[in-house]
Image (cartoon, rainbow over all chains, first blue to last red):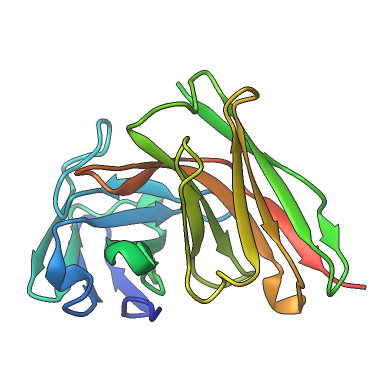
Length: 111
Length: 121
């Protein structure tokens, strides 16, 4: 079970936007609409911010948006705030054998 | 709101079995809408899915851990458990239990705070 591929780091200035990519295969991202994204602040548990490729749970600001094209999913964080710092993980349903697969994570720095 | 809380030994000796329990409160574990899962995170590293279990005890496992992992669920106590046998230092990690919404959402929407397990003699 190989992890989804994310860039190890990303950065952006306060108020600006940043996009994080997540590349999978035709067996996971390319095969379904069940891509999710999680935000993990230091010392805390991950928090779900995107599910079903682009939907936001209640309470998640619309500064977070996401999409998928082929085998690559993307998360955009707009209007960067210092509280957005931390790690972002993508995840995908990967079929009955693998079920859930995570990306390696991207550490976001807000400059 | 439903809450999850992991419990178990924080130190396990190499070759022994790691055992953790997740207590679910303010909601029933007996629901056809959810799976109950385990995810771990080695220090300074990313997330790794371990497996998840349905209230009927149907379980799915990470293929790379399947030979060493067993999940169980007890609807009478609203708890589910993880056993990982023959542990090594590579199994040192923060272990999270989480709720997975199935059937169209397929994501972990609620997480426990996590518990650090160190494998060392």
